[in-house]
Image (tube, rainbow over the protein chains, first blue to last red):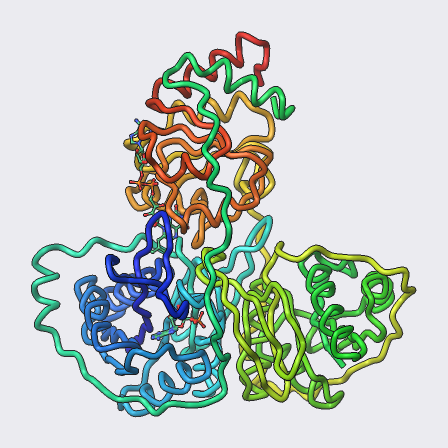
Length: 251
Length: 323
Ligand SMILES: Cc1cc2nc3c(=O)[nH]c(=O)nc-3n(C[C@H](O)[C@H](O)[C@H](O)COP(=O)(O)OP(=O)(O)OC[C@H]3O[C@@H](n4cnc5c(N)ncnc54)[C@H](O)[C@@H]3O)c2cc1C
Ligand SMILES: Nc1ncnc2c1ncn2[C@@H]1O[C@H](COP(=O)(O)O)[C@@H](O)[C@H]1O
């Protein structure tokens, strides 16, 4: 099986988010970078499927040149090679991103059986790049999957709904977007991380496309940071806790 | 005209769709346009009544045997065709799995962008949007200027609002879909066999993070003592293999809205906190008075959860609150 997984470099924010002065971005001066848990599961699933059926996992990202760091993290998890679409520092919208990814798939010379995406990206959460890539390539697509089986060229994919799950069947080649919980992504070994540093990463410069949302500014939502009422500093606080529960009439 | 996708179960319109209609009606009023809805299925009468009471003038009903079961691309094709034929200025859908998926297909077919997770729209020369990023950790202000403005509404961020309107007029819309659009179809619906109160519906949620050190037994016992309570966790606890992912609360997990949320040994990372925005009260148990969760909580106990949780269970029993 030839599998492509698409991941996006995003800052790893902690308890507080602060913005750059122009309010167009998160201030990342003291932050590390990662990719979404959904996409970690996409990579893990690709690697597991190749372990079972043979083949290759190619991991692709569109972003600044430093996004090779995330490609190498995915390669350390077991992906075979990487493609960096060097999009510079500017944020690409979902239309531009999808067209660039679809172009890169076409140019890669590989007939992918399965293209795995996150259900939504961690930062901009546009909820559409996977679907649009499928539309560009004329492939079938299902989103938000938390359980996946592949046998004889058909994928059986489950999506959670309140009170149960929906089961979809989809013939490969196909695009599937996934959610965290699909599997338990592995922690790469030290040795895998070292080797990933030497893995081949192809670089391309994608063609920009117009027609996305125009960002005006970002805003950190107000949160109520008034100090909590401290009920106590040990097990003797239990009586006050139960008072609170009684007042709220939940016990 | 503003066209809104409406989801329903046998004619009963779901909550997020009603919320979506409230935002869509606001857009329609600001731009002096009428509000239409599009729905799939054979329950036109019930749907027309429900959406009419939320300001919809005309319901476009797609009642087609081939589309009786949900099929994402075909539904997207139908919405795109309906928008084109009726010349709509905006197409709006609920920010649910199906709503976003259908609308993403429609937006791709219309070759326009889709703005997801929108919470407010100001109509001027452009649509000035407010929408959520990072699961609601950040708010984005942006401009949408497509020929057809396509957007989804963030779930549970906008309140539904009724009008005194009667049932919407019903028009049949017959889309031109082909077999290619039906490659992906819903094959089966399975009911969950999970016991207990679902996280999303619990009135009390007790959750544990890395601070539990993997021992959830005291938190489990506490949950058993309280009616309508459920156990949750942070992503760190799931990553450690201590809890199943279904228990995870946050950006990439469950969203909860209990009367009280009791996070134990959880630091309060932004990605965790967006999952419990809906909680009325937060009572944090943490050894670290400087932990971010303490700032975000209403009540706090600064202590070891392994000592406090059993003490609360005992106190509940002493006061006769045994489940
Ligand atoms: C894109 C993205 C999505 C994410 N989605 C989610 C998500 O959906 N949900 C989520 O939870 N996280 C999510 N995260 C991860 C998040 O950033 C944090 O890493 C995670 O929430 C930390 O979990 P924690 O609070 O249990 O662990 P820690 O941050 O390690 O905190 C442990 C806390 O336990 C306290 N403690 C230690 N011992 C005790 C004791 N004996 N008694 C009481 N307190 C004690 C400590 O003081 C500390 O505050 C996401 C991250 C990213 C990048
Ligand atoms: N810049 C990018 N590079 C690679 N993949 C991306 C990029 N943006 C989005 N994706 C993929 O598309 C999915 C959905 O993104 P979105 O439509 O932005 O929510 C993500 O989870 C990724 O798998």
